Image (cartoon, rainbow, N blue to C red; front, top):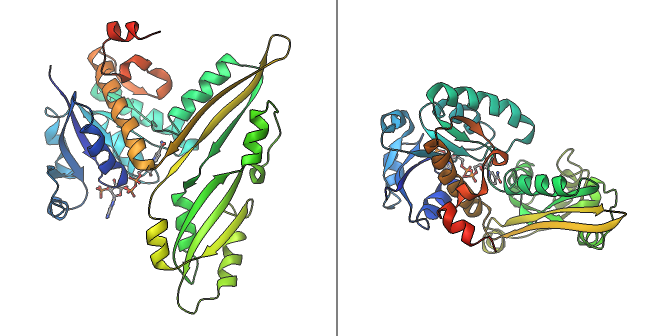
Length: 327
Ligand code: NDP
């Protein structure tokens, strides 16, 4: 059987994760990696991958079935997905929650125009967490839902620390409050404020001679990022930061606590514990690339979210094989 021919657009953490994930899926092959950077600079890494400049992507229309878009949500994907969606079937992990409806409309228009199929905003949140929230809410309409993130590195909060004068480097972990999780698991449905759900732990390398107290104050009082949380700031050395804090772990839980009948308690929980956020997200994108390919083969066009895609389409197995595994 013909393999699904994949292209990767954008070669950061996610792009590298997708390359690795494709090698775990024998029904797929990587055709090329597209980047805005000079392909020669990427070739120097010595990886056995074909690098092509983004400007030449269109030439690959006949050679690639699905483009997996791995650019950043802030500025790359709003431009790249609508641009490529009329040329290729695409999958992306656009995660700016408030802008998803607007993004959907743009991508849908482009995909319909080109007769292509685009899966938007997949990954784990949005993505697997969104699916589990929908599942739990549909099954337990009377209930309360909670999402906890972490323990994991938040890129946005880490960047915010690094912008403070006197800071050389820094990493921020979002950590769920165990007491809150325990209370929900015991069947309670508490009203939780921002501060009750997560704490923020920061590890900071200060510049030589910098005032640590001033840095700590600047972190904990920063509006939107830290002021609404209990935040700890620990000063460490550069060596310690590189040794202990260079991974990109993440994860979390979606919990819905509800009642059925005359007040019988029911609870649904979905959790992730990830040693590498980008490698995991990449694995989700690759499974959805298969689904995009299948939907397109059925003649479907336009944009789709995880809510619109039959679960069986994610699997390399046939519907007959999957039916045998129902039990
Ligand atoms: P990166 O910052 O590593 O990469 C983003 C882009 O920046 C790349 O596509 C690449 O484009 C460019 N880039 C990467 N490294 C370099 C470099 N050394 N020099 C110059 N340019 C570089 O982001 P991530 O891969 O970690 O994440 C991408 C997005 O994935 C995030 O913005 C987030 O929105 C999303 N995400 C979604 C999740 C979900 O659950 N839905 C979970 C995790 C992430 P180019 O090759 O063209 O230069």
